[in-house]
Length: 441
Image (cartoon, rainbow, N blue to C red; front, side, top):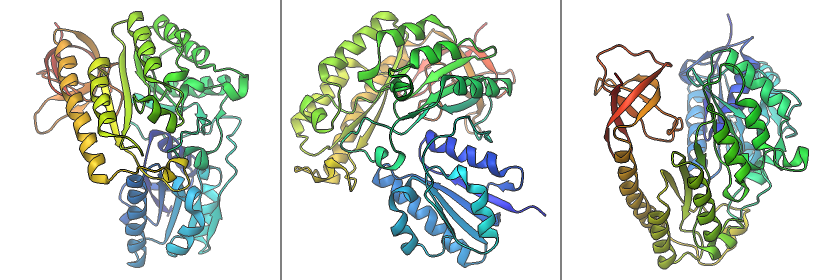
């Protein structure tokens, strides 16, 4: 009888790809269960990007430790960012954990599971050098969507961020290897491919001496069978006119840019060690929208950074009203030990951070409502993702909604719709975050 593994993946989509790679390495020998209480061995792939992520990871591990104490689990393996960052501390604090592996856990996860099965401990903070060729994965996203990580690590060194410490320097995969993996996924039915990295816009700089994202997506866009090619996480200072022109050249590349701006005050941006400014942001947005008015612009902001005043916060509200991003995520600044920003004067209370974040999201709610109402009467290809049991409506996404992070398009249809298929939908109503439509005649 094959051993049962329960796997929990926490954090971002980049972490999810790592989890899928581990699943691929384990799938030939083991079965997987969704409920770790029914597993023989639990594997938890952790995140530690901000305090909330650390707390979630630690609480998940502690709950699994309790299951092991009660005899529900024979083994417990912890992998990923939290282990990479706090490996020594975790060993002492969590004695019930049988194996600790870092962010490159997929390289020796099979060995770790065998070691734990034999009743022994395993410890491996593996060399973070990426493989020369992609590893087969067990995709956990429903058809037809799959993520492809085009690079690992980051060299931007933002003063608040632990990613370079945890994930290391920028390591780009070769164009050939990325295209090979993309072709394999498309042949398996995954027709929405999402390219991800910490900063996709810098892809290729380490390998080729200059960014090669435009060249990469130009080649990926013509792979037979691809429907949508989507980019996430492109830092604004590295987005070029060439990249935008390439996105406009191919119908398969979605007109969707996710560019983390983080702030609009130049002094705060300098303290963050960011290269973008208020002025460069204005020029970039103007350039993109002058090229095509159907580009969806998403960004993230950090509020409550050390030294941020109420006036700075008010200026952020005003800038949001000026730029009118289609999508927005706002994070409270997280004081991460070991980062330059953690030692800056002018740290702000959690209550004040929360107040400023809520105020930004209130501004954005009005912008989002306005944007969604402007889409009424428009026709979109919508990927159906499921049926909402409460409303009885189908729901899905167009090119304008990225998976998991944006709103939904609800579809009023008497016709049975097939999950994973695309339908022409005419928008009839727009709300703060979601839309409603019906099948076009």
